[in-house]
Length: 219
Image 1 (cartoon, helix red, strand yellow):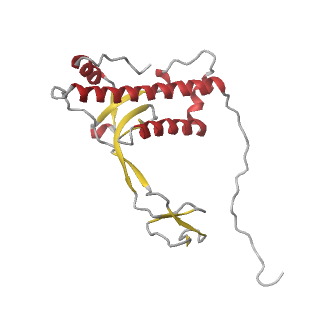
Image 2 (cartoon, helix red, strand yellow):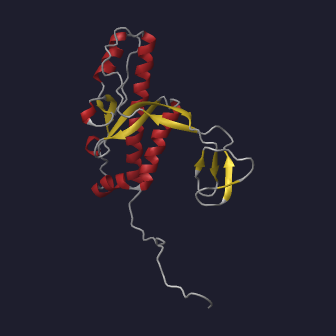
Image 3 (spheres, rainbow, N blue to C red):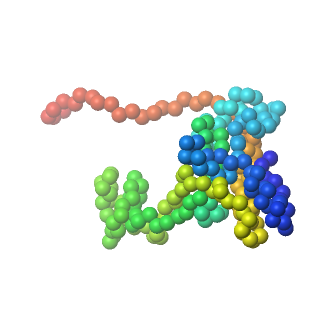
């Protein structure tokens, strides 16, 4: 649907591909910064005839789908060592946008195995957590890394590509093609879930903390 074949032997065909690619805002329309993007709104995807409308539109809000979408976006970022990442933008979350980013040491040295609280200080053995007071604070075995994203930064908005080498152009085209393949994977995964699962309701009990009276002194 989104991925297109490009003849990467010629500069003209590669420049035409990246110049004509759909773009969308990297943050809000007012910042006027755009990057390569694709429209994955449901009206833009061919709904299979054997999927009813309720499933087609309600599936988008289920946590299981959101988790799968996050996994697909994360796989793309990891594949590009987080220098390039894909994110969701738009008021209804209907656009996948290509972002520039990276990864760096977070500065955290230890964490609590009980509640997950991270700390900048290392411990010599097992320390006390400052949040939950559990004796469960340990050092990270490897340097803890933090992923960052340049939200609002444009990509190739003002490039004319005339000075780009064939090698640089191929690299950019292959990046955008991989991004397009990601968008194809997102739509294919969504269609697959809609075709193979139905949405049902399940009642769950949610624990609630309340205040009660307790006698002072003895039983």
